[in-house]
Image 1 (cartoon, rainbow, N blue to C red):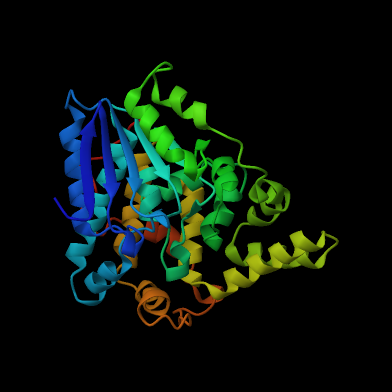
Image 2: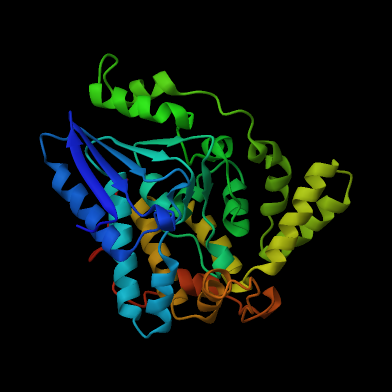
Length: 362
C-alpha cells in the first residue's frame, strides 16, 4: 500500500482517499496498483456496502496521471513500463464502472485526465463550486484516454468534440450538462454528506442521500454555446472546424460568442496537429462503440503509438518539465499530417491489448 492513498472502513462505507495533495493527487503507478488492490479487496467484503472516493486537500480531487513519471518512461527507453501503467489504469477504470457496489466520487477541485478515469465512471459523481473538470490531453500533444473518449462521445451534440480538441475546462454546471457529473453539492456540505452516507438513515440508498444535499449549480456556459459549437465542430476535419469558427467569429454573432469562437480557433491553431487529428477521429469513433471496454482498447491502441512520438515528449517538456509553453510540433501544421494517420493509429494493434481477449460489456 502506497503512502499516497488511505483506505478505511466504517459503518459499511469504504472510504478511499487520494493522499498526494502537494501534486494535486496526481496518479503514480504505485497509486494505481494500490487503488486497484483496495477495490479488489472490498468487492466481496461484507463490511463494505458502498465506496466513497475522494482526494485530500482543497485544491483538487485528482489532476490526472503523473506526467513526469510518464515522461521518464517514454524518454528513458522504458516503453514497456509506460504500457504497463496504461493497461493497469484502464483496467481500474473499467473495474470502477462495473463495480457491484455503489461508488460515490467527490470531484471537489481539479479533476482532470486520470482523475476523470477514476471519478467519471463511478455510480454517483458529485461536483462542487470548486470543481474544474477537463480532459486536457491535447495540450501536451496527446489524446483523451482513461475512457474519456467514451464520455466525450456521449455528450450532447458536438460538445464532446469541442471539449476534447480544445481541452476546455468545465465548471460544475458544464460538467453536469456534458454528462460528466450527476449532482452538485457545495463544498461546505460535503462533510455532512459523508456523515449521512455513513449513518445511512432513511432514505437509505446512496443516491437518495445525495439528493438531500443536491443543489442547482446555475447556468452552463457550455450549454449556451451549443448552437454554434454544433455548427462549427460538426465539420469533417480540424482545419474545417477552424475555418467555421473564424467565419462565425467574424459574422453577426454577439460579442461574447464571437470572442469565444475566435479564442477556440486560436487554441486549435496552437495545439499539436497530430494530436488534434487523432482526437477528432477517436471521439467520433467512440460514439459507435458498444462499451467502455471497447473505447479503452481503442484508446490503448492510440496511446501505444503516442508514447513513441515526438509531440507527446515535446508537449510534456514544454508544459511540465521546462514550462516554456512553447512546444515545437512535428509535423507543424494540419496540412502536413499524413492522410489516413488517425484511422491507422486507432486500429493498428502495436502491442498486447488491455484485456487478453476482446471484452465487450453492453
